[in-house]
Image 1 (spheres, rainbow, N blue to C red):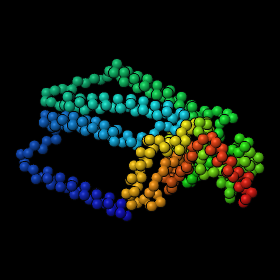
Image 2: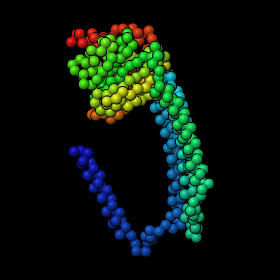
Image 3: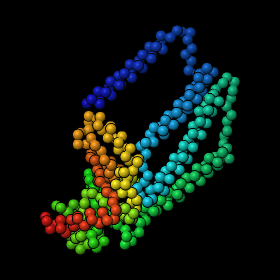
Length: 349
């Protein structure tokens, strides 16, 4: 209701200013210049405004890069992440290079070739040479970027299932995640959403021997420097598994299994103790201390990796996350040995 009232008030203010402008126009002297055709003075003023605007635009751009660079993510925590970041910054550099040149030319030509009495514009019906140049250059640049990106894409999409590969199923539902690890047999058991009942949240086939030693958890643990292959399933709607610090994302589609993989390179402890994260956490805690909307228990922030949902999947989409712990192989083996298997879980219930 408040929003509707605000909209009505803003609309009424707009109408008021419009009516005032009409009154002001009617009150002008009869001999005042009210022509709608631009003269030399108008063109001169508009040309200068164009030049002033390009200075403002470049100033704003430099300020944004300088002031907002602190929001960049730290170095990637996955093996392929450095290539991903390199491709991103190459793309950004090309875009900025083209933008700076074309934006300057647009505003400079608007000033240089502003309308003057007696000047006629030179008209080109077509120019095959120019069209060829501005077509072939983007084709070559974009082809290079696409080919470069395909190598990175192939690296995370075609992870081989070797003896060293850790295969984990990530299961999405409104509004949470579950992770399923294969047990000692190294094979994930069969699952189907039609089998979901009681404690069997993921719909595992209880008659499948491979599913008996599977481990279902709500906190994802990954060993450092070991390739991980993720297989994704959704119970209800379209979700998107987003690992920002590992530079990976995959849609989780109902009725099918999607997958990708990466190799973690930085443990949770290592990134928490990095210079970048120490400084960032310090700034966040300073803000939280002075924020009356943050409760006492949440005043102190400590960094953790999280799996997020990057598709708007419903009312609690913003809160759909799962903590990720990257640790050494020894720590991972100790943790996994302490977890309850699916067989043990069903036996208790």
